[in-house]
Length: 469
Ligand code: SF4
View: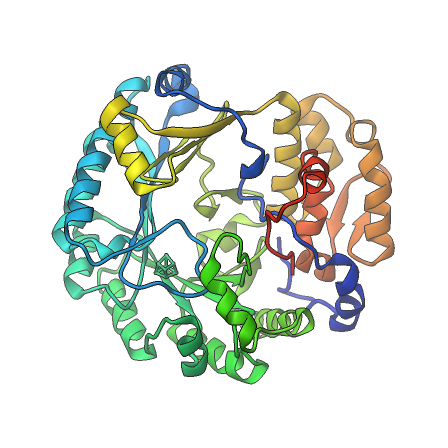
């Protein structure tokens, strides 16, 4: 989605629309979204699901490993993590992970080759350099890398040593994501995450020494005490360090998941209008600096593969974020890991102890799952087109699913017309549409039009999702 590369979003239009469009909504790293996965799954049923994957579908695999540990709690964080200083927990975790890897591998058909590997968390570099090496040996023993694998990791600059960087280089990591969030000292104080520009600069320099490592930065807008002036300084510091990719996430205020966020309500949390201003500021600053806007919330330098993938429609989205490699089967390991399979989704036990006990007893630790119906797959494809390309071609839908887009989604058409009237998309006679620069800011709202589960989730009440802006 080439959002702000040429035409920036119109601030006045968006400000006028904000009261109607800023609402709770999914980020669509999956469809259906996780709250709709209601199926209980035993370990044997999960084994059968794995065993039923065909060779063509299952090669090469993508492997995600969730490392849940963190040294300190960042107060904005809603991830699944275990804040601990206890040295025995990572040791036990690695033992369980080894078992889980072997059990999944033995249930699968095919060569087991994997083309993508990602370590996320939590904080993977909470593990010692030796433990990190041990983890990757176990992963590669079960899932040998294909010829040109993508191997990536999320690191916390505060706990990442040169010795970690040595291991990453020796193990073949070719993409490192650094959690930056914001460099402003007042914001860092409020979110309980202090790290300096020079700490980050050192790791960037160290990662680039190998010559083959892409650098991603994660930023967050909408944090307490963030102002246009302070965020502008952070953006310039980021631009000076020239990461290849930047993920710019809106702060998700989800106090029912992350209770510690309640403390933010006593201090200066930006209003919806201020959040919008911060987002537009970031889009304008990054695109002025030469970054291409990708999908919902990513930016990449023009020679990065993610930027090159846009005109070729090669952009995909999964639990690891935006990627240029369509992977048939994404296998997840560790507590709360979500496997995205051609048949649907399986999530492992979210609690560390439950995951360990379940793997010890049964070899696997499925907690819940969802079997995707043909209609789920049609809607997942439409939502993916909106989130990745910012447009939907009716002819591509017909060619893929053998159905006419307009007749299949006749009830959604009225909503699309309302979006068009608000200047958020351009609609064609056959139902094809393309988001405008303003519409790309509200891309989650457009995807929500095609979410068949959302009305039921809303009727059930309860809070499930963060705000869309
Ligand atoms: S933001 Fe990252 S480092 Fe901070 S608590 Fe959450 S997972 Fe841990």
